[in-house]
Length: 614
Image (cartoon, rainbow, N blue to C red):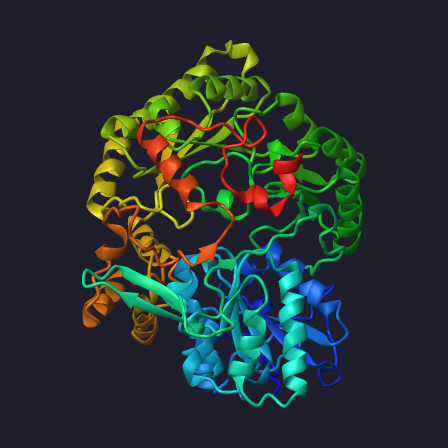
Protein backbone atom coordinates (compact mmCIF):
# COMPACT_ATOMS: atom_id res chain seq x y z
CA UNK A 1 0.00 0.00 0.00
CA UNK A 2 1.27 3.46 -0.90
CA UNK A 3 0.91 6.23 1.65
CA UNK A 4 -0.21 9.66 0.54
CA UNK A 5 1.00 12.29 2.96
CA UNK A 6 -1.82 14.77 3.22
CA UNK A 7 -1.17 18.41 4.11
CA UNK A 8 -3.03 17.88 7.38
CA UNK A 9 -0.44 15.32 8.52
CA UNK A 10 2.53 17.40 7.41
CA UNK A 11 1.10 20.49 9.10
CA UNK A 12 1.30 18.66 12.42
CA UNK A 13 5.00 17.76 12.24
CA UNK A 14 8.01 19.91 12.93
CA UNK A 15 9.94 19.24 9.70
CA UNK A 16 7.66 18.07 6.86
CA UNK A 17 10.54 17.76 4.37
CA UNK A 18 11.80 14.78 6.35
CA UNK A 19 8.95 12.70 4.88
CA UNK A 20 7.99 14.03 1.46
CA UNK A 21 10.77 12.63 -0.75
CA UNK A 22 10.90 13.93 -4.33
CA UNK A 23 14.23 15.72 -3.96
CA UNK A 24 16.54 16.53 -6.86
CA UNK A 25 18.40 13.38 -8.02
CA UNK A 26 16.23 10.97 -5.99
CA UNK A 27 15.62 7.80 -8.02
CA UNK A 28 12.09 6.80 -9.04
CA UNK A 29 11.29 3.49 -10.72
CA UNK A 30 8.25 1.40 -11.55
CA UNK A 31 8.01 -1.23 -8.79
CA UNK A 32 6.51 -3.67 -11.26
CA UNK A 33 9.63 -3.54 -13.45
CA UNK A 34 12.19 -4.56 -10.82
CA UNK A 35 13.04 -7.89 -9.20
CA UNK A 36 14.24 -6.48 -5.88
CA UNK A 37 12.93 -3.65 -3.76
CA UNK A 38 15.65 -2.72 -1.30
CA UNK A 39 15.06 -0.39 1.65
CA UNK A 40 18.21 1.40 2.80
CA UNK A 41 17.30 1.95 6.45
CA UNK A 42 19.04 4.54 8.58
CA UNK A 43 17.88 4.33 12.22
CA UNK A 44 17.89 8.06 12.85
CA UNK A 45 16.36 11.25 11.49
CA UNK A 46 16.45 12.45 7.90
CA UNK A 47 19.07 15.13 8.54
CA UNK A 48 21.47 12.63 10.14
CA UNK A 49 20.82 9.96 7.52
CA UNK A 50 21.21 12.28 4.55
CA UNK A 51 24.65 13.31 5.81
CA UNK A 52 25.94 9.74 5.67
CA UNK A 53 28.39 9.00 2.84
CA UNK A 54 27.70 5.26 2.86
CA UNK A 55 24.04 5.91 2.08
CA UNK A 56 24.97 7.97 -0.98
CA UNK A 57 27.31 5.25 -2.27
CA UNK A 58 25.09 2.20 -1.77
CA UNK A 59 21.86 3.96 -2.80
CA UNK A 60 23.24 4.92 -6.19
CA UNK A 61 25.19 1.73 -6.89
CA UNK A 62 22.05 -0.36 -6.28
CA UNK A 63 19.89 1.96 -8.35
CA UNK A 64 22.32 1.63 -11.25
CA UNK A 65 20.93 -1.91 -11.58
CA UNK A 66 17.87 -2.23 -13.79
CA UNK A 67 16.54 -5.10 -11.66
CA UNK A 68 16.69 -3.27 -8.31
CA UNK A 69 15.08 -0.22 -6.76
CA UNK A 70 16.74 1.08 -3.62
CA UNK A 71 14.64 3.48 -1.56
CA UNK A 72 15.39 5.36 1.65
CA UNK A 73 13.72 4.46 4.94
CA UNK A 74 14.46 6.66 7.96
CA UNK A 75 13.26 6.80 11.55
CA UNK A 76 10.28 9.15 11.85
CA UNK A 77 10.64 11.74 14.59
CA UNK A 78 8.29 11.40 17.56
CA UNK A 79 5.75 13.89 16.18
CA UNK A 80 5.45 11.96 12.91
CA UNK A 81 5.30 8.63 14.73
CA UNK A 82 2.35 9.96 16.72
CA UNK A 83 0.57 10.99 13.51
CA UNK A 84 1.28 7.59 11.93
CA UNK A 85 -0.14 5.71 14.90
CA UNK A 86 -3.27 7.90 14.94
CA UNK A 87 -3.92 7.03 11.30
CA UNK A 88 -2.70 3.41 11.48
CA UNK A 89 0.08 4.17 8.99
CA UNK A 90 3.04 1.83 8.74
CA UNK A 91 6.68 2.72 8.18
CA UNK A 92 7.12 3.86 4.59
CA UNK A 93 9.85 4.59 2.05
CA UNK A 94 10.57 8.14 0.89
CA UNK A 95 10.74 7.52 -2.85
CA UNK A 96 7.45 5.66 -3.43
CA UNK A 97 5.61 6.31 -0.18
CA UNK A 98 4.99 2.54 -0.06
CA UNK A 99 4.84 0.66 3.21
CA UNK A 100 8.02 -1.37 3.64
CA UNK A 101 6.26 -4.53 4.85
CA UNK A 102 6.44 -6.14 1.42
CA UNK A 103 9.89 -4.94 0.41
CA UNK A 104 12.33 -7.73 -0.43
CA UNK A 105 15.32 -6.63 1.65
CA UNK A 106 15.69 -4.01 4.35
CA UNK A 107 19.30 -3.11 5.08
CA UNK A 108 20.10 -1.18 8.27
CA UNK A 109 23.36 0.70 8.63
CA UNK A 110 24.58 0.44 12.23
CA UNK A 111 26.73 3.49 12.91
CA UNK A 112 26.17 3.92 16.64
CA UNK A 113 25.22 1.54 19.43
CA UNK A 114 22.53 3.88 20.75
CA UNK A 115 20.62 3.53 17.49
CA UNK A 116 19.70 -0.09 18.29
CA UNK A 117 16.44 0.96 19.93
CA UNK A 118 15.49 2.82 16.74
CA UNK A 119 16.08 -0.33 14.67
CA UNK A 120 13.59 -2.18 16.88
CA UNK A 121 11.14 0.72 16.87
CA UNK A 122 11.25 0.99 13.05
CA UNK A 123 10.47 -2.72 12.67
CA UNK A 124 7.57 -2.33 15.10
CA UNK A 125 6.28 0.68 13.13
CA UNK A 126 6.51 -1.42 9.96
CA UNK A 127 4.51 -4.22 11.62
CA UNK A 128 7.40 -6.61 10.96
CA UNK A 129 8.24 -9.17 13.69
CA UNK A 130 11.36 -7.99 15.51
CA UNK A 131 13.06 -11.36 16.00
CA UNK A 132 14.46 -13.10 12.92
CA UNK A 133 13.05 -16.48 14.02
CA UNK A 134 9.51 -15.04 13.92
CA UNK A 135 9.74 -13.84 10.30
CA UNK A 136 8.82 -16.26 7.53
CA UNK A 137 9.25 -15.85 3.76
CA UNK A 138 6.38 -13.34 3.55
CA UNK A 139 8.46 -10.67 5.34
CA UNK A 140 11.49 -8.73 4.10
CA UNK A 141 14.95 -10.12 4.75
CA UNK A 142 16.53 -7.90 7.44
CA UNK A 143 20.28 -7.31 7.12
CA UNK A 144 22.81 -4.97 8.66
CA UNK A 145 26.22 -3.46 8.08
CA UNK A 146 28.41 -0.60 9.25
CA UNK A 147 30.95 -0.31 12.07
CA UNK A 148 28.67 -1.70 14.80
CA UNK A 149 28.16 -4.87 12.75
CA UNK A 150 31.67 -5.97 13.78
CA UNK A 151 30.14 -6.78 17.15
CA UNK A 152 26.44 -7.00 16.40
CA UNK A 153 25.82 -9.69 19.02
CA UNK A 154 23.48 -7.45 21.09
CA UNK A 155 21.13 -7.30 18.06
CA UNK A 156 22.10 -10.64 16.46
CA UNK A 157 18.68 -12.24 17.03
CA UNK A 158 16.93 -9.37 15.24
CA UNK A 159 18.85 -9.64 11.96
CA UNK A 160 18.83 -12.37 9.33
CA UNK A 161 22.42 -11.58 8.35
CA UNK A 162 25.17 -8.98 8.49
CA UNK A 163 27.65 -7.79 5.88
CA UNK A 164 31.14 -7.35 7.34
CA UNK A 165 33.31 -4.63 5.88
CA UNK A 166 32.89 -2.45 2.83
CA UNK A 167 29.67 -2.90 0.91
CA UNK A 168 30.24 -1.85 -2.69
CA UNK A 169 30.66 -5.44 -3.96
CA UNK A 170 29.00 -7.60 -1.34
CA UNK A 171 25.67 -5.76 -1.60
CA UNK A 172 25.43 -6.79 -5.27
CA UNK A 173 26.35 -10.39 -4.46
CA UNK A 174 23.61 -10.78 -1.84
CA UNK A 175 21.13 -9.12 -4.25
CA UNK A 176 22.05 -11.54 -7.04
CA UNK A 177 21.49 -14.49 -4.69
CA UNK A 178 18.16 -13.03 -3.59
CA UNK A 179 16.95 -12.87 -7.20
CA UNK A 180 17.93 -16.54 -7.69
CA UNK A 181 16.06 -17.52 -4.52
CA UNK A 182 13.03 -15.43 -5.47
CA UNK A 183 12.85 -17.05 -8.90
CA UNK A 184 13.02 -20.48 -7.29
CA UNK A 185 9.81 -19.69 -5.40
CA UNK A 186 11.09 -18.37 -2.02
CA UNK A 187 10.13 -21.67 -0.40
CA UNK A 188 12.42 -21.44 2.62
CA UNK A 189 14.30 -18.44 4.02
CA UNK A 190 17.01 -20.78 5.28
CA UNK A 191 17.89 -21.70 1.66
CA UNK A 192 18.71 -18.07 0.90
CA UNK A 193 20.72 -17.65 4.09
CA UNK A 194 22.72 -20.81 3.36
CA UNK A 195 23.50 -19.54 -0.14
CA UNK A 196 24.80 -16.16 1.06
CA UNK A 197 26.65 -17.66 4.06
CA UNK A 198 29.15 -18.93 1.48
CA UNK A 199 29.90 -15.34 0.40
CA UNK A 200 32.98 -13.91 2.10
CA UNK A 201 31.95 -11.26 4.61
CA UNK A 202 28.41 -12.55 5.26
CA UNK A 203 27.55 -13.46 8.86
CA UNK A 204 24.29 -15.31 9.57
CA UNK A 205 23.88 -15.25 13.39
CA UNK A 206 21.31 -18.08 13.48
CA UNK A 207 23.99 -20.38 12.02
CA UNK A 208 26.09 -20.01 15.18
CA UNK A 209 25.52 -21.28 18.73
CA UNK A 210 26.86 -19.32 21.69
CA UNK A 211 27.68 -21.11 24.96
CA UNK A 212 28.41 -19.34 28.25
CA UNK A 213 30.52 -20.18 31.29
CA UNK A 214 29.15 -20.14 34.83
CA UNK A 215 30.73 -16.70 35.36
CA UNK A 216 28.64 -15.36 32.40
CA UNK A 217 31.61 -14.99 30.06
CA UNK A 218 31.38 -16.53 26.59
CA UNK A 219 32.57 -20.15 26.44
CA UNK A 220 32.38 -20.61 22.67
CA UNK A 221 30.83 -19.43 19.41
CA UNK A 222 30.49 -22.38 17.02
CA UNK A 223 28.83 -22.86 13.62
CA UNK A 224 25.72 -25.08 13.64
CA UNK A 225 25.36 -25.13 9.85
CA UNK A 226 27.82 -26.64 7.32
CA UNK A 227 27.64 -23.47 5.20
CA UNK A 228 28.77 -21.23 8.08
CA UNK A 229 32.48 -20.40 8.31
CA UNK A 230 34.28 -20.64 11.69
CA UNK A 231 35.63 -17.11 11.05
CA UNK A 232 33.87 -14.40 9.04
CA UNK A 233 36.41 -12.22 7.26
CA UNK A 234 35.64 -8.60 6.40
CA UNK A 235 35.43 -7.40 2.82
CA UNK A 236 37.48 -4.49 1.55
CA UNK A 237 37.74 -2.73 -1.80
CA UNK A 238 41.30 -3.57 -2.82
CA UNK A 239 41.55 -1.07 -5.67
CA UNK A 240 40.04 1.98 -4.01
CA UNK A 241 40.96 4.17 -6.94
CA UNK A 242 38.46 2.33 -9.16
CA UNK A 243 35.90 1.66 -6.41
CA UNK A 244 32.41 2.92 -7.24
CA UNK A 245 31.75 6.52 -6.24
CA UNK A 246 28.48 8.23 -7.22
CA UNK A 247 28.77 11.15 -9.61
CA UNK A 248 25.35 12.41 -8.54
CA UNK A 249 23.79 12.96 -5.12
CA UNK A 250 20.34 13.68 -3.74
CA UNK A 251 19.91 17.33 -2.76
CA UNK A 252 17.78 17.61 0.41
CA UNK A 253 14.91 20.10 0.59
CA UNK A 254 15.82 21.00 4.17
CA UNK A 255 19.14 21.56 5.90
CA UNK A 256 21.04 18.43 6.96
CA UNK A 257 24.02 18.01 9.27
CA UNK A 258 26.68 17.78 6.55
CA UNK A 259 25.03 19.90 3.88
CA UNK A 260 27.77 19.81 1.27
CA UNK A 261 29.50 17.70 -1.34
CA UNK A 262 31.72 15.06 0.30
CA UNK A 263 34.74 13.65 -1.51
CA UNK A 264 36.10 10.43 -0.01
CA UNK A 265 39.81 10.89 -0.66
CA UNK A 266 40.95 7.72 1.08
CA UNK A 267 39.70 4.88 3.23
CA UNK A 268 41.47 3.56 6.30
CA UNK A 269 44.11 5.16 8.51
CA UNK A 270 47.82 4.62 9.09
CA UNK A 271 48.11 6.19 12.54
CA UNK A 272 47.17 3.40 14.95
CA UNK A 273 45.59 5.42 17.77
CA UNK A 274 44.89 2.67 20.30
CA UNK A 275 41.37 3.83 21.19
CA UNK A 276 40.12 4.25 17.61
CA UNK A 277 37.98 1.42 16.25
CA UNK A 278 37.53 3.07 12.84
CA UNK A 279 41.30 3.29 12.41
CA UNK A 280 41.57 -0.51 12.65
CA UNK A 281 38.38 -1.83 11.04
CA UNK A 282 38.98 0.20 7.87
CA UNK A 283 42.66 -0.80 7.53
CA UNK A 284 44.65 -0.80 5.31
CA UNK A 285 44.77 2.81 4.16
CA UNK A 286 43.94 3.14 0.45
CA UNK A 287 43.88 6.35 -1.58
CA UNK A 288 41.97 7.64 -4.58
CA UNK A 289 43.99 9.53 -7.22
CA UNK A 290 43.60 13.30 -7.31
CA UNK A 291 42.56 13.41 -10.98
CA UNK A 292 39.71 10.96 -10.24
CA UNK A 293 38.65 13.08 -7.27
CA UNK A 294 38.73 16.30 -9.30
CA UNK A 295 36.44 14.74 -11.91
CA UNK A 296 34.03 13.60 -9.19
CA UNK A 297 34.08 17.05 -7.54
CA UNK A 298 33.19 18.79 -10.79
CA UNK A 299 30.26 16.42 -11.44
CA UNK A 300 28.92 16.53 -7.88
CA UNK A 301 29.02 20.32 -7.69
CA UNK A 302 27.33 20.62 -11.09
CA UNK A 303 24.48 18.22 -10.28
CA UNK A 304 23.80 19.54 -6.77
CA UNK A 305 24.34 23.30 -6.71
CA UNK A 306 26.16 23.07 -3.36
CA UNK A 307 28.45 25.93 -2.35
CA UNK A 308 30.78 23.85 -0.17
CA UNK A 309 32.90 20.77 -0.66
CA UNK A 310 34.52 18.70 2.08
CA UNK A 311 37.27 16.10 1.90
CA UNK A 312 36.22 12.96 3.74
CA UNK A 313 38.65 10.58 5.46
CA UNK A 314 39.86 9.59 8.92
CA UNK A 315 43.01 11.73 8.60
CA UNK A 316 42.84 14.06 5.61
CA UNK A 317 46.31 15.58 6.01
CA UNK A 318 47.83 12.08 5.56
CA UNK A 319 46.56 11.97 1.96
CA UNK A 320 49.73 11.82 -0.13
CA UNK A 321 48.33 13.91 -3.00
CA UNK A 322 46.82 16.65 -0.85
CA UNK A 323 48.72 19.57 -2.41
CA UNK A 324 47.80 18.61 -6.00
CA UNK A 325 44.22 17.91 -4.98
CA UNK A 326 43.68 21.20 -3.12
CA UNK A 327 45.31 23.17 -5.94
CA UNK A 328 43.01 21.48 -8.45
CA UNK A 329 39.94 21.98 -6.29
CA UNK A 330 40.72 25.67 -5.88
CA UNK A 331 40.70 26.01 -9.69
CA UNK A 332 37.13 24.67 -9.57
CA UNK A 333 35.87 26.39 -6.40
CA UNK A 334 37.50 29.80 -6.05
CA UNK A 335 35.88 31.48 -9.03
CA UNK A 336 32.45 30.10 -8.10
CA UNK A 337 32.83 31.11 -4.42
CA UNK A 338 32.54 27.50 -3.30
CA UNK A 339 33.95 26.82 0.15
CA UNK A 340 36.45 24.03 0.72
CA UNK A 341 36.76 22.36 4.12
CA UNK A 342 39.36 19.91 5.40
CA UNK A 343 38.11 18.09 8.48
CA UNK A 344 40.27 15.48 10.24
CA UNK A 345 43.52 17.44 10.06
CA UNK A 346 46.43 16.19 12.12
CA UNK A 347 48.02 18.76 14.40
CA UNK A 348 51.52 17.45 13.58
CA UNK A 349 51.32 17.89 9.81
CA UNK A 350 49.15 20.99 9.66
CA UNK A 351 50.37 23.96 7.61
CA UNK A 352 49.20 27.56 7.44
CA UNK A 353 49.76 27.54 3.67
CA UNK A 354 47.26 24.71 3.36
CA UNK A 355 44.69 26.44 5.57
CA UNK A 356 45.03 29.74 3.74
CA UNK A 357 44.55 27.96 0.43
CA UNK A 358 41.43 26.09 1.37
CA UNK A 359 39.78 28.91 3.31
CA UNK A 360 40.05 31.65 0.71
CA UNK A 361 36.28 31.70 0.24
CA UNK A 362 35.27 31.57 3.91
CA UNK A 363 37.21 31.23 7.13
CA UNK A 364 35.83 28.79 9.70
CA UNK A 365 36.91 27.63 13.12
CA UNK A 366 39.57 24.96 13.54
CA UNK A 367 39.29 21.77 15.58
CA UNK A 368 42.32 19.87 16.82
CA UNK A 369 42.21 16.63 18.79
CA UNK A 370 45.12 16.25 21.22
CA UNK A 371 42.88 13.62 22.93
CA UNK A 372 44.88 13.73 26.20
CA UNK A 373 46.27 16.53 28.38
CA UNK A 374 49.71 15.09 29.17
CA UNK A 375 52.47 13.63 27.02
CA UNK A 376 52.50 10.42 29.03
CA UNK A 377 48.83 9.75 28.28
CA UNK A 378 49.20 10.76 24.62
CA UNK A 379 51.93 8.12 24.40
CA UNK A 380 49.66 5.56 26.11
CA UNK A 381 47.03 6.04 23.40
CA UNK A 382 49.67 6.28 20.63
CA UNK A 383 48.51 9.70 19.50
CA UNK A 384 52.07 10.47 18.39
CA UNK A 385 51.81 14.24 18.76
CA UNK A 386 53.79 16.40 21.17
CA UNK A 387 53.03 19.57 23.09
CA UNK A 388 55.48 21.28 20.75
CA UNK A 389 53.32 20.24 17.75
CA UNK A 390 50.25 21.73 19.46
CA UNK A 391 51.94 25.01 20.41
CA UNK A 392 53.54 25.45 16.99
CA UNK A 393 50.28 24.81 15.12
CA UNK A 394 48.17 27.12 17.27
CA UNK A 395 50.82 29.84 16.95
CA UNK A 396 50.56 29.55 13.16
CA UNK A 397 46.77 29.74 13.43
CA UNK A 398 46.68 32.82 15.63
CA UNK A 399 49.25 34.62 13.48
CA UNK A 400 47.15 33.72 10.44
CA UNK A 401 44.08 35.42 11.90
CA UNK A 402 42.15 32.41 13.23
CA UNK A 403 40.57 33.05 16.61
CA UNK A 404 38.11 30.17 17.07
CA UNK A 405 39.96 27.04 18.14
CA UNK A 406 38.35 23.89 19.53
CA UNK A 407 40.47 21.35 21.40
CA UNK A 408 38.97 17.88 21.68
CA UNK A 409 39.92 15.45 24.47
CA UNK A 410 38.75 12.22 26.05
CA UNK A 411 38.51 11.49 29.74
CA UNK A 412 38.47 8.03 31.26
CA UNK A 413 41.30 6.68 29.10
CA UNK A 414 43.20 3.63 30.39
CA UNK A 415 45.85 4.51 33.05
CA UNK A 416 44.49 8.08 33.33
CA UNK A 417 45.14 9.93 36.59
CA UNK A 418 43.78 13.22 37.94
CA UNK A 419 47.10 14.76 36.92
CA UNK A 420 46.29 13.82 33.31
CA UNK A 421 42.81 15.34 33.63
CA UNK A 422 44.08 18.64 35.03
CA UNK A 423 46.71 18.53 32.27
CA UNK A 424 43.90 19.31 29.80
CA UNK A 425 43.35 22.66 31.53
CA UNK A 426 47.10 23.32 31.62
CA UNK A 427 47.41 22.63 27.88
CA UNK A 428 44.46 24.89 27.06
CA UNK A 429 46.06 27.65 29.17
CA UNK A 430 49.34 27.23 27.26
CA UNK A 431 47.44 27.56 23.97
CA UNK A 432 45.85 30.76 25.28
CA UNK A 433 49.35 31.92 26.27
CA UNK A 434 50.46 31.49 22.66
CA UNK A 435 47.80 34.03 21.65
CA UNK A 436 48.81 36.55 24.33
CA UNK A 437 52.49 36.22 23.34
CA UNK A 438 51.76 37.62 19.88
CA UNK A 439 52.21 41.42 19.79
CA UNK A 440 48.88 43.18 20.20
CA UNK A 441 49.04 44.89 16.82
CA UNK A 442 49.65 41.53 15.06
CA UNK A 443 46.90 39.43 16.57
CA UNK A 444 43.15 39.32 16.02
CA UNK A 445 41.00 41.09 18.63
CA UNK A 446 38.95 38.18 19.97
CA UNK A 447 40.08 34.74 21.07
CA UNK A 448 37.73 31.79 21.68
CA UNK A 449 39.14 28.50 22.88
CA UNK A 450 36.73 25.66 23.48
CA UNK A 451 37.79 22.57 25.39
CA UNK A 452 35.49 19.65 24.68
CA UNK A 453 35.65 16.25 26.39
CA UNK A 454 33.86 13.00 25.70
CA UNK A 455 33.97 9.95 27.93
CA UNK A 456 36.15 7.12 26.65
CA UNK A 457 34.27 3.97 25.61
CA UNK A 458 36.39 0.82 25.02
CA UNK A 459 35.52 -0.73 21.66
CA UNK A 460 36.02 -4.14 20.03
CA UNK A 461 38.97 -4.47 17.66
CA UNK A 462 41.14 -1.95 19.45
CA UNK A 463 44.10 -2.29 21.79
CA UNK A 464 41.78 -1.29 24.65
CA UNK A 465 39.08 -3.91 24.01
CA UNK A 466 40.01 -5.64 27.30
CA UNK A 467 39.96 -2.45 29.43
CA UNK A 468 37.47 -1.54 32.15
CA UNK A 469 35.40 1.57 31.45
CA UNK A 470 35.40 4.33 34.07
CA UNK A 471 32.32 4.37 36.28
CA UNK A 472 29.87 7.24 35.94
CA UNK A 473 30.87 8.46 39.41
CA UNK A 474 34.55 8.56 38.42
CA UNK A 475 33.77 10.40 35.17
CA UNK A 476 31.76 13.04 37.07
CA UNK A 477 34.66 13.47 39.49
CA UNK A 478 37.04 14.00 36.57
CA UNK A 479 34.68 16.44 34.83
CA UNK A 480 34.35 18.44 38.04
CA UNK A 481 38.13 18.51 38.52
CA UNK A 482 38.62 19.80 34.99
CA UNK A 483 35.90 22.44 35.40
CA UNK A 484 37.63 23.70 38.56
CA UNK A 485 41.04 23.74 36.84
CA UNK A 486 39.87 25.95 33.94
CA UNK A 487 39.98 29.47 35.35
CA UNK A 488 40.21 31.72 32.28
CA UNK A 489 37.01 33.20 30.87
CA UNK A 490 38.56 32.88 27.41
CA UNK A 491 38.39 29.10 27.68
CA UNK A 492 34.98 27.45 27.50
CA UNK A 493 34.45 23.85 28.60
CA UNK A 494 31.88 21.47 27.09
CA UNK A 495 31.48 17.87 28.20
CA UNK A 496 29.53 14.83 27.07
CA UNK A 497 26.80 13.18 29.10
CA UNK A 498 28.34 10.14 30.79
CA UNK A 499 24.99 8.27 30.93
CA UNK A 500 24.94 7.78 27.16
CA UNK A 501 28.62 6.75 27.25
CA UNK A 502 27.78 4.19 29.93
CA UNK A 503 25.06 2.56 27.80
CA UNK A 504 27.20 2.79 24.66
CA UNK A 505 29.91 0.89 26.54
CA UNK A 506 27.47 -1.87 27.53
CA UNK A 507 26.34 -2.49 23.94
CA UNK A 508 29.78 -1.99 22.35
CA UNK A 509 31.16 -5.13 24.02
CA UNK A 510 27.88 -6.91 24.66
CA UNK A 511 26.66 -10.39 23.77
CA UNK A 512 23.38 -11.90 22.58
CA UNK A 513 21.76 -11.80 26.00
CA UNK A 514 21.34 -8.04 25.57
CA UNK A 515 18.92 -8.49 22.68
CA UNK A 516 15.95 -9.04 24.98
CA UNK A 517 16.96 -5.94 26.97
CA UNK A 518 16.88 -3.79 23.84
CA UNK A 519 13.48 -5.11 22.71
CA UNK A 520 11.99 -4.75 26.18
CA UNK A 521 13.40 -1.22 26.57
CA UNK A 522 11.68 -0.14 23.34
CA UNK A 523 8.44 -1.67 24.61
CA UNK A 524 9.02 0.41 27.76
CA UNK A 525 9.29 3.60 25.67
CA UNK A 526 13.00 3.92 24.75
CA UNK A 527 14.03 5.29 21.34
CA UNK A 528 16.24 8.06 19.94
CA UNK A 529 18.74 7.33 22.70
CA UNK A 530 21.37 9.46 20.99
CA UNK A 531 19.14 12.52 21.45
CA UNK A 532 19.39 13.95 24.97
CA UNK A 533 15.75 15.02 25.17
CA UNK A 534 14.56 11.47 24.50
CA UNK A 535 17.19 9.42 26.33
CA UNK A 536 15.57 7.54 29.23
CA UNK A 537 18.48 6.26 31.28
CA UNK A 538 16.31 5.27 34.24
CA UNK A 539 14.05 3.23 31.96
CA UNK A 540 17.08 1.39 30.59
CA UNK A 541 18.34 0.63 34.10
CA UNK A 542 14.89 -0.58 35.12
CA UNK A 543 14.76 -2.84 32.06
CA UNK A 544 18.14 -4.41 32.88
CA UNK A 545 16.83 -5.02 36.38
CA UNK A 546 13.57 -6.56 35.11
CA UNK A 547 15.52 -9.10 33.07
CA UNK A 548 18.10 -9.81 35.76
CA UNK A 549 21.07 -8.55 33.74
CA UNK A 550 23.83 -6.47 35.32
CA UNK A 551 25.07 -3.89 32.78
CA UNK A 552 28.30 -3.39 34.75
CA UNK A 553 29.33 -6.89 33.65
CA UNK A 554 29.83 -5.55 30.13
CA UNK A 555 31.71 -2.33 30.74
CA UNK A 556 33.03 -2.07 34.31
CA UNK A 557 35.41 -5.03 34.37
CA UNK A 558 38.81 -5.66 32.82
CA UNK A 559 38.99 -8.81 30.68
CA UNK A 560 41.86 -11.29 30.49
CA UNK A 561 43.55 -12.12 27.20
CA UNK A 562 42.31 -15.71 27.60
CA UNK A 563 38.61 -14.73 27.73
CA UNK A 564 36.57 -15.56 24.62
CA UNK A 565 35.24 -12.23 23.38
CA UNK A 566 31.74 -12.10 21.80
CA UNK A 567 33.27 -10.94 18.52
CA UNK A 568 36.17 -13.42 18.31
CA UNK A 569 34.57 -15.19 15.32
CA UNK A 570 34.88 -12.00 13.23
CA UNK A 571 38.16 -11.37 11.37
CA UNK A 572 39.01 -7.77 10.43
CA UNK A 573 42.50 -8.66 9.22
CA UNK A 574 44.23 -7.17 12.27
CA UNK A 575 45.37 -10.00 14.52
CA UNK A 576 44.51 -10.42 18.20
CA UNK A 577 48.22 -10.85 18.89
CA UNK A 578 48.87 -7.37 17.51
CA UNK A 579 46.21 -5.85 19.78
CA UNK A 580 47.74 -7.63 22.78
CA UNK A 581 51.18 -6.21 21.90
CA UNK A 582 49.68 -2.73 21.54
CA UNK A 583 47.86 -3.00 24.86
CA UNK A 584 51.10 -3.99 26.61
CA UNK A 585 52.94 -1.11 24.95
CA UNK A 586 50.16 1.22 26.13
CA UNK A 587 50.70 0.10 29.73
CA UNK A 588 54.39 1.01 29.33
CA UNK A 589 53.54 4.30 27.49
CA UNK A 590 55.58 3.14 24.48
CA UNK A 591 54.48 4.40 21.07
CA UNK A 592 54.22 2.62 17.70
CA UNK A 593 55.21 4.35 14.47
CA UNK A 594 52.64 4.97 11.75
CA UNK A 595 52.34 2.58 8.81
CA UNK A 596 54.35 4.74 6.39
CA UNK A 597 57.28 5.01 8.81
CA UNK A 598 57.46 1.36 9.84
CA UNK A 599 55.22 -1.70 9.51
CA UNK A 600 54.03 -2.82 12.95
CA UNK A 601 52.95 -6.26 11.70
CA UNK A 602 49.23 -5.82 12.41
CA UNK A 603 48.25 -8.43 9.83
CA UNK A 604 46.32 -6.44 7.21
CA UNK A 605 49.09 -6.92 4.65
CA UNK A 606 47.19 -10.16 3.92
CA UNK A 607 44.86 -7.99 1.79
CA UNK A 608 47.88 -7.18 -0.44
CA UNK A 609 46.88 -3.58 -1.06
CA UNK A 610 47.06 -0.02 0.21
CA UNK A 611 49.74 1.52 2.38
CA UNK A 612 51.20 -1.96 3.09
CA UNK A 613 52.25 -2.14 -0.56
CA UNK A 614 53.02 1.49 -1.42
